[in-house]
Length: 301
Image (cartoon, rainbow, N blue to C red; front, top):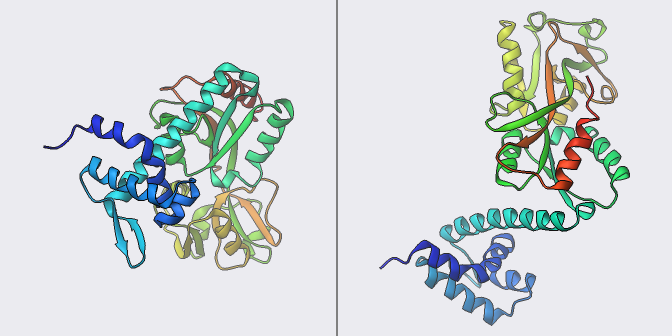
């Protein structure tokens, strides 16, 4: 007879930390040591977990004991649950003493060089007792984290299509053509994308949100770019363009172009709009709501 999931969960709860540690350490002995558990107790817990779930969670690989595929799936679920619980504990602290609360702040990786640190520096000076936990992720991951409570507020792209997200515009970044100083187009005051139809391009990999936005710009200009390099990181694209391996369409770099490069505005003008995002499905704690209100007052046109 298959046990009820709720009954199984009740038996699992005290032992789940070991499962997560095994997923991180990939070895039972190392996992047990990391959480201060004797090897014999760890073996007993693994046996109990297997009995409770009803499927093998570990296997022997030579001298090692590692997780099975089923064990990894369960460990990942536990990890996500732990993140949600940790966020709940943070909000509990916040409720008892807002002045010493915690804010879990998420932001795009592309904003981690200057934009997010500048915002955080100002807030830290004004509210030194509030704890700040930082999460860097892609836009879709940030939206999911806002809804499940593992992020309170996020600095990311403003998209009207995002369900149950409230966004306050913070600033906008114009799209530009990035190229080395010696490129013939570097002397232009602006450029239209159809003028670049014979250029070689470097860009982000297909499927990345910013790449889709850039593709939309080319589509509107009725131009098909010829990519010679595609990569996962914006700053790598910028570096490739600066090195003369191709031109790139990117949001203007905050603080100015990289040394040795030029950023020429694209016309018609197009912008990436960045805002402060929160979930309509959740009520923010006082510290997080205070951070949101403080940050929105720092928005720029």
